[in-house]
Image 1 (cartoon, rainbow, N blue to C red):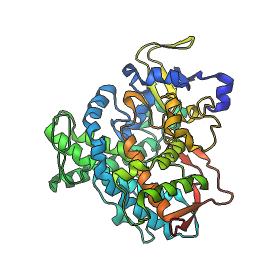
Image 2: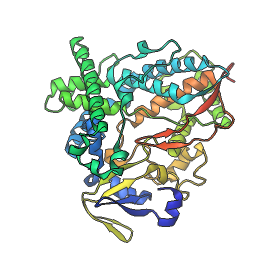
Image 3: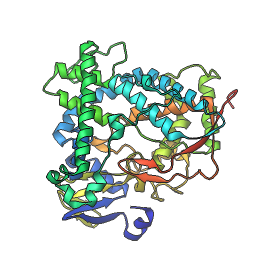
Image 4: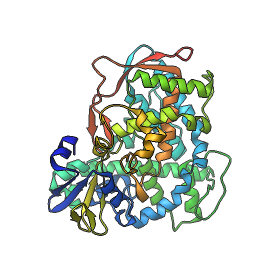
Length: 437
């Protein structure tokens, strides 16, 4: 729902998928009524179309499974635990900067490099697997033959072909058979990694609902779940571990590296203050927390291009929205991409203005006007992980590289699938930064 549609129809609209009614809501007050209420945490029917590929992880699971898994996994995303991943972030980010500098003076599509780096980080921190050994001679990882990259998400396709809403028909199609094969390949790969961890006796216990201790070494999310499974098999079985691994492998997101030299310079000035000109020092958690200007730029990029442009809920009870009553059982569609562009919440909404996220400006904003990671009890469990990851990657690039614009390729053309992607890529010119300039 674009802003032009908002002007024509207002902040609430109804549409139908076959015989099922759905309501789109854009205004933060209305979204708060839905997202903050634990009675509305059940997701709508088309999330089950992801089960064949993702299984029943935190994204797709029913309410009771989600509550159990969320309670178990939440301690793994505490800042004290995430601090142990900072070195992994820094090492991967440094490799990314080195790869970019091999293209010194050239124009390149940054998305391939960034996606590979994010994938590398997620493999190491989530699965405890180092994928750099698969790197090609030019330093870019070839992921095209991996099951995860082969995955084709077909939710929109099924919605546009109503007869495919019936699973027994969909499974007979070539797309359905291919999706099942990809799901099996990914499941086998995850199980193989689980068995390798178990045989190596590398499982360590981290803080969990039943107690436990934080170890001195880095512990991947996979190892944490294996430990919880061994101690509490009724909470987390092997199938659940596979499901959550697949879910978190999708958590890597593209972000906008905008060509705004004035903000790039402000971020570099901030980094120079933090690192005091020492380009070789890796960032600490304290350093990452101090990157306030960079964090504002990241948040503004996520406002313009939230990685997940749409999510939905099924109402557990009637909800009054203005003069309308939305009945229990109705599906509600939430569009962060559109809510983030409401001019009465974000003036000049299409412009890149990181000052929107200064502490004073953020304090004035409605808490549900900004939803890059959803909000309420079923928000994204990995939001802190994602922000730290992006800070580490972008700061490493800015400390060593100057980013320039490419003539004729300065506009982002968003392409909407399950996530927002840039059609035609994001093109930049890379130059080595010398003496902090």
